[in-house]
Length: 406
Ligand SMILES: *[C@@H]1O[C@H](CO)[C@@H](O)[C@H](O)[C@H]1NC(C)=O
Ligand SMILES: *[C@@H]1O[C@H](CO)[C@@H](O)[C@H](O)[C@H]1NC(C)=O
Image 1 (cartoon, helix red, strand yellow):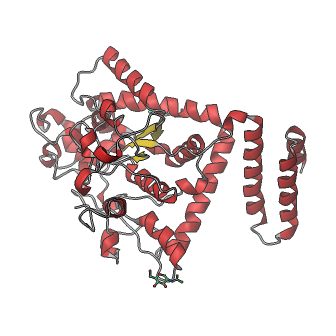
Image 2 (cartoon, rainbow, N blue to C red; image 1 turned 45 degrees about the vertical axis):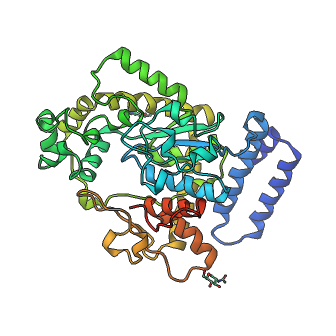
Image 3 (cartoon, rainbow, N blue to C red; image 1 turned 90 degrees about the vertical axis):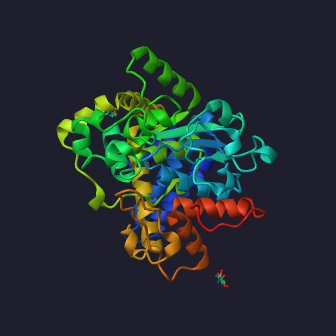
């Protein structure tokens, strides 16, 4: 109670007094064990309101023009799903791949003509988030000037292992080695510069940002690239701190917590994860030195950004709320209340695309959901290709109907 009193002394606005009274009322109203949790949630929302009042710049409108550079094997499918759901909630227009292709021209450098109806819609798109190789000059032809640009990076050692399994059969450098450790023991004997489709095997994030993944390590060049990215992108998230990333994202975009609640999508079964030995972990930092520099730099700026906007106590309180809400929704929506192996998925339309030696997991919905809940739950588990096709069909009803992206 002492803390609450101090808070109201510091933050004595009338609306807050009212909110405080509601809060105190709720202490008496609820006598179940949920009381503390509920009071805590209300308390947090009161403190946020107070914080916004004390920091006028924080009074904000949700940002709805958003470009997400979807990097590979970085939990980016989960973010795509978040953006798709947000676009439906606010009736926004998504820059979808031409002809309902799965990508915006990847691995070619992006060109505006890869977007469906680019000629008629010009730069009036709100959301752009499908795989592409970044090319700012062309992206700017699609997205309005006030667009918020963000992306996500992942620890290159974990990323390379994930790429190895996922692109095992696709990438020549991976195909010819027994496992990730054999590959890393002498990468140059498997990696041929002249061969196509090896982009996943070396500095793939660097490549996705539009740069040369085979460039020599050169400090001035690296500095130049990092500065360039820093100037264009407002935010770079870190997959290794995914929930912290979601809190920072919704704070900067002025979105609701519910907008960033997610079920992990496109995750691999633990049976298809290979263990990197410690020596090879170090080797990745050399083999993917450009990605390693990229990751270190933006990991650092990620934490600086968090500290600019909130203290760590607030951060972890919100992370905790996010995880509680996620768990609640999983219990509401899911038959098994967790992700399951792909062969256990009952609804064929909800099966995620399977690639390489990776076994990609999915979900079963409960059978007894009411229509409204069913719709929310369905969108949360809908795999990328199916959701893209769904948006494509509803955005361009006059085009040829397709049920999946492949
Ligand atoms: C990322 O940032 C965190 C927090 O500052 C730090 O503990 C960690 O060592 C950083 N990781 C790398 C690879 O720099
Ligand atoms: C739920 O949706 C189904 C099919 O879309 C429809 O037939 C049914 O009437 C709906 N039920 C309610 C209660 O809206």
